[in-house]
Amino acid sequence: MKIGIGCGVNPEKVIWSAGKSASPDVEIICYVKEGMEFSVPKFVSINYSDCPEKSLVDDLHSKKIDAAVRGSLPANDTLKYLKKVYDVSRLERIALLETSAGQKFFFAPVGVDEGWTVSEKVSFVEDGRRLARAFGLPDKAVILSGGRLGDIGRHEMVDRTIYEAEEAAEISGAVHGEILIEDAVSDAGVIIAPDGISGNLIFRTLVFLGGGIGHGALIVNIKDLFIDSSRASSSYEGILSMAKCIIEGKIH
Image (tube, rainbow, N blue to C red; front, top):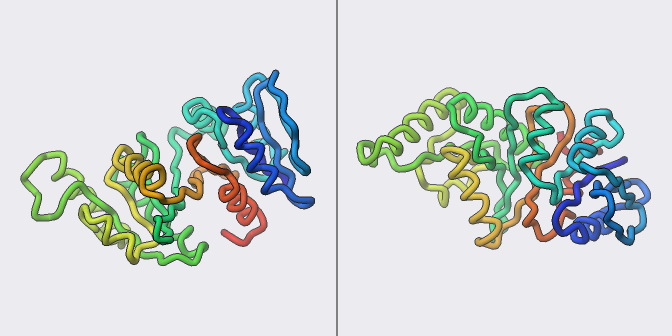
């Protein structure tokens, strides 16, 4: 089994995580910019190139590796090239999050350009439920909006999020949880934010300020296994472990 991970900023952290995750059965390949030198842990190899994000995506697409993790490579360049290679206009990412109290749930959208339409929300619900069942989480899906039903009329933007959440919930069989994310986390395995901006803010607040954990975001609308990650992650062990489990078929 071969898993590739990108090394951009803080490459030492990525390589350290790779060393903790690699084994005789799992080779971790770190994609690094040409000219950088590192000591390499056992069962870890280095792929040097002028453009590591392109090398990582190309090797995934050509089946040279079984899975790819963005690691600390720049998001814009990496994901833009991923869209080009897989010929998709947008990426659908669903993140596995964990609160400081240990509650896990799948969450989307996490990209600022994702989740802006009713159809995208419905798609996130369907993919999120499939993942939740595979991970042994409840398949209850909650779609959030910018207010309570009683807030209709206070602002046109709030109204739009409420109407869209109601429509998406009706189509998908999800629950419109209004703005009450604190209630949603208690029993939902899938939570959908009103849009990509609020989703990204929720993700950052939970993971970087609230003591929660981001276990990686699976891109669900391409044929190969690519797991997105944040450059600010403290470690990549959990994400590499997720990739290994998916490849082994423990998670479908």
